[in-house]
Length: 301
Ligand code: OGA
Ligand code: MN
Image (cartoon, rainbow, N blue to C red):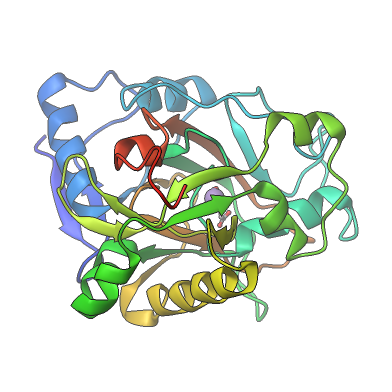
């Protein structure tokens, strides 16, 4: 069966059919998927019910997988190379609304890119929908993706020139403090000190330029903190305007993968008394973004 790739949005995202991810992917088929991934930024594979092992096997084709620290310091439901994007406790019960793990998870509803708070951030994430809440007036737990390449292209050239080579500090504590989550354990503080990332990235494969922003971004290195925070907020608001955003409505069995180097995403609200269970695998990038952009030792650092 031939691979069929259809666009989902004018600039971002495509649906991929005609492939069974439960089986080993032939090299020429993988090459087609990889090319579509670099071109489209987000790929949706419908009707791909996967076991964790199958998800890991497909994800590994894109590079080394991240192993997650135990952020909330509670017993984990899943193995450390699968991020638990669910509202369940280790025993598989729905978390109470006021559970601190729920508060931590709420951070995923802020615009972000995965693991920008790590020295080597995530290259791509693959999210598999296992159980979903039914839609209701609060929302259905959709996931939105914003195209940071299209946002960059829409900036006036004079503005672009001022942003090139700026360096941003990112930290998991910045994103979680915005939603009032502060009780990390000391181990997490030690494991995840603030890191520096480039504000503007050049994609290794597509050659496109994009903004690199996230709720984890706290300030611009070398600038007064408040000025940097304002610039980051302004750019996030600019880059997440409706014309840059694709909203994904989940169906069980969807596997969605996105390029963290040139997109942001956020989860939308849902009825959290119902089960919402997605399993994420995360592929690491090959280097810190300052190294990639040759900004190490730059005067702004
Ligand atoms: C993620 C994430 C949002 C959502 O899996 O990295 O941010 O909709 N998910 O669950
Ligand atoms: Mn995320």
